[in-house]
Image (cartoon, rainbow, N blue to C red):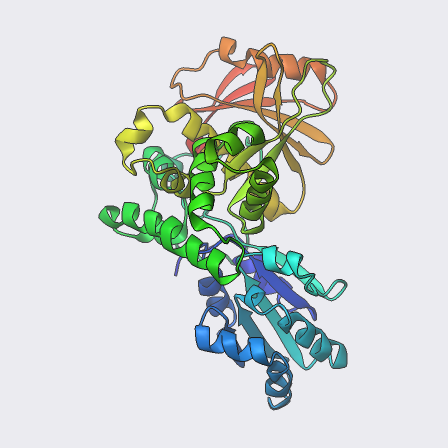
Length: 415
């Protein structure tokens, strides 16, 4: 069994007497992890199964009868509902049971989309629930070969503490180029190399379409498919609704709705512009990133081969670093990710805002970084001497380098 960073965290929290909501994109490993953490579940419903979904759509109150029929025990009976968003009324049934007897059952509701729940106004059990998210793999779970040999440095823009109780077996180590090509989904990480491209294409062509059609979120799949390809091609750039609308042949409101749909399905996230700069010419448009670079390549229709990434590796490397920082902040449950760009062209790729401090991060494909490549970092640090003590240039150098007393060049495997 491969270890996930959240495993011991969830194990502790699942013991709390609340309803637990678990969200994450398809194929991030939610069901696998829940089965490992909750092997003694008394009830396990899977609403991705057509017959079971139809049964509970007709009669969501069946859950009440099913749970009340369970024998009472010394510990709460665990009830798991997978793909719960497919039957929004199930949340009302869970609330009814929970409010009637908080100690008799422990509910875990899992889903891969919040869209239908939000649109239908589904009851997300405020005041009664804990919210958990699962993301594609982080470096702690799937290290680099170099990371395994290197002494671990605490110098990182966002460090994840070692979770006590995490399974010792990590996912197979992978090179930088391999993960920039195929991404970090757990199933892709353990698949045979020759199968990865086909699996990623199926993810976009089959899983995504199935999810959208099932929830009746998209009436015209061809139109959304054009948008998806454009959104993936432009990933990492500042959002330009007008251009995407023109190229896709749809309205700007539809484009905005589609971007929101990707976020609701946990397939993308926005990095907002940093607003605390004294510079008057700072741009304010957010950037949009896909949650996984492998899925991004497949959605954009790009060749899923390392040579394709090698042709222009810098932007993909930047997107991978951005996703890694974002996932860590989400797991820690604190902090925000920004970027800075001015009309004159000065930019800082990422700014981590956490615990009152700012940490600027530049991403360069170079193996031999020098101080000139950190000039925008230095300018930012000088603008914010109290809140920004140190900055990082993430690159392909072989060991951490101190470029300046306030700037460290950090190898990708020390991130």
